[in-house]
Length: 314
Length: 144
Ligand code: SF4
Ligand code: SF4
Ligand code: SF4
Image (tube, rainbow over all chains, first blue to last red; front, side):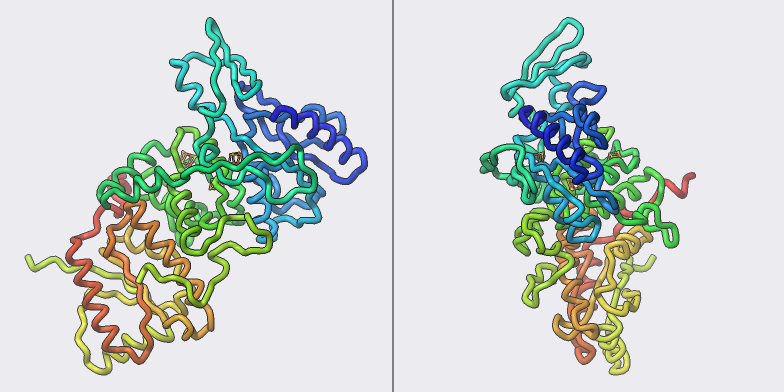
């Protein structure tokens, strides 16, 4: 995947020099190992800072809504699906965008690697040939990247971009995996067990809303958490408020979530918030045969109806 | 102490189910007094926030009812509602916020007063069987 780096830089320089776009959204090397940071290159010189490897998990589509410039953006499978949703929801115009499609092999889960190191700090990380070598004071360890992917990437079914103006590489083979294993486990629990499971899951939540802010499908001018008349969710970390927040956040992205995992990645206390959204993704697929952003022009499922829709709630 | 009686917040659409409740009253049909009716213009107005708010304020159950699909006063309001309800009910149960049987949905036209009274009995019975809904009521605020 690092081969994309050269291609991204070349494309960025070309597009910026020809004034086809005002800005190129991609990644540059982060100040922390295993964490690249989103970067907006505005000049051909800045384009040399753009990079690509397995630490580009953040969904760049989050930087598009309501922008007015002409933008080139590097898009993985998931980013591209969120971009199509944003186009449908009038957050950005297709004509404004030049999409550099990045067929993806999954992003590394920094936390999973860190967990193997008994608290030792990583100073450096290098990625080559499907392996990540991390090192710090008195240690060096190599990991197979495929075993240390973000959970959403491990079960991702759409790694190739669905829209692009230029591809950065050959399409990758899509995975054949059972993607609802953990959801089915929860479904099989009793109501009491479910309640306990989710209460324990969100117990550490500090309500920082990073999961919401990182999400490319969250762009309401006023989020429900900020509404005050009436106030639908209290501002405390009382369990009821936190439950309300998580329930509604997930519901608001129902049928619009690409399972990009940015929410989970952003959470400072490591809450697996995808357990809320993944269930809705499964329901939407089963009930309406819809997968977010896969087909251009197909509006999200809560925005349309069919006269013969199923009524499992009666 | 008298037997515990559940409170059931009931959202009815103005054009059909509210009419059914009205007709049931005018016709002197008996139905349990546990339901507290809130009138909506249309089930399309129904928002998940309303259900959560009802539970948070101590309701033991929620019932939402509107026109039959195809008979919406606004042509398609309940078609949209239907998709919301399908996802909403599964998600409420999946996340353990409610047990199956606490939140009910139905389509009842303004002529179906007997069906309304009958459904009201069934809803209240089901919620009674589950007992009071406690866990979604906010507690911390009272201490502070
Ligand atoms: S969710 Fe899919 S497309 Fe997105 S980063 Fe993971 S593997 Fe790549
Ligand atoms: S809810 Fe999470 S996984 Fe879904 S689109 Fe938003 S950030 Fe991505
Ligand atoms: S990012 Fe994590 S801690 Fe912050 S609000 Fe979301 S789940 Fe809670």
